[in-house]
Image (cartoon, rainbow, N blue to C red; front, side, top):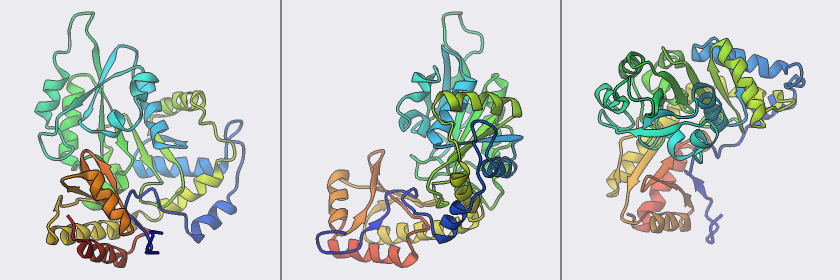
Length: 344
């Protein structure tokens, strides 16, 4: 609540959602077991379903998306390896250097020259460089893609561009990991099943707490051999949750709600149009993230907060994220308050 007792509208992230009664009941009644010793039946059911939905042979539940990504990178990379990711990718800027610190790889960004969050095959090939350098040079062994690209405003990589990037990486002998924290949004925006966006990758991570309403949890998926190695790495990182079925049950409910994301995309489009009408410089959202360029991000965030609107900063811009706990009426109310406040 603000000082004027105005109900706060929280646009900071689609992770602020809370599990509804249906999800809470599923969690309370979940069949559970010791997932470290001999397995939890609900976790197993989630892993099997997630693997199928993502088009991968096997999957492993993890408490967080950051853990899912660092597990994948730790399996793929050796010390002295260099890996590439689109500029501003989550693995480069939002995971506290775990790719270098824990996985032992040297990160290197690739510019977006094919659109927001999307390098071209030519830019990728140039970044990879020659395959046979001197022994004292780092080896480029991995490409990390992100779909949707959070820092680029929830931008989507369409399948044909995904295939071109994979082809370029494969020709250079690189493995490919896909950070699919919001792959559900990408699939919804494109009208495709999530598996259509993972074709050819070695591994993929996906999150249940971003947009789908689950309180916690991700998966990392790949071959059966990869998941066997990933399970050991998860234990090393402290991710060996015992009766994890209580959390996996929420993720199973969340998977039933992927289709609802289209409503969040519509809310984001309405917010973007409304802000533009009020003079804001905003992107046209492909999914549920609206980025606004303002003169002073911190001043703008404080001003919005005073009106009961919570937003976030990313890449020098103000970020608004629509989600299932904000209605279209909430979006209209936010626009009304912004107009009354004289923004931007």
